[in-house]
Length: 346
Image (cartoon, rainbow, N blue to C red; front, top):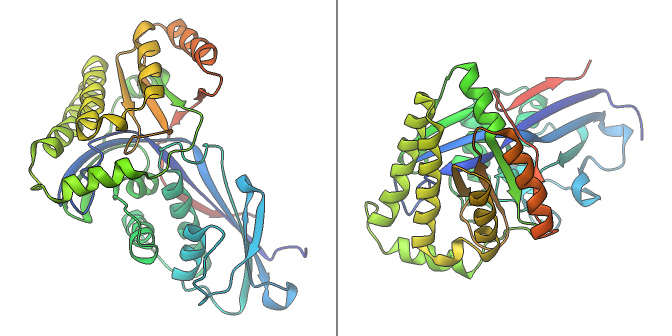
């Protein structure tokens, strides 16, 4: 492999604690979502070459899956990682440029933390810099969501991409799908640090994937009015979360997280799995103030927990999780003050 002419780096945070999720969808029509951008990041790195330096013009290295494969623009038989391949297809990469893009994330695949959205946002951000184009964070998020819904025909809300593009703590108002306004919460450092110290992300040990449960929920919501009680209950938790964080009231934030998880269960009881209930029971026993099944819920995935004031309770919970189920995994997180970041290596 020759030395690259240029290296472009891009990172984007994942998302936790998405209170109000399910209301950022086309069938909800309008919604309100609270979420928090956190490390670990999704990373993209473009190594740029002259076309005559390499055999394959475009190569994708999906490092987490130990896969490296070439991509041909115009060929839509995407059979490796369709989201990555579709993103490369969508962006107008100059024909005289060759590149290899490396994709990596320390967040487990299928953790229901918006990792695929973060990867797409990071990749688009890097490709924008390569093409000398300009996109605002909102435009990057829109593009990432459009690739998933229009090019791949998948069910997809808007909040994951927005959180990855903007970072921080967000209150998102979707006034008409897929259009939204994003308000970032600016809070005192002490509140930020306390929230960061008390939050915990627990991976249930197996990847979340769309299932018959989700199709059942979507079919039920499709037939209901956008202002039906099940969706409205979810919307309300977003505003409660926003107000609690502004007030520095973590007890109220914990209540909003619990209300959201209970509202998810009312959509379908299987959206809060047996493993999730097991983690919740352990969290309660260790003084947790709140818990949120991340993403849409269902089999696999993860939970966001909000612990009490005493740090040793959090550490004791992490130990108890390992004893309860060796598949349970505590993923260290840090709140991300920034969203998408793109830069050239010297």
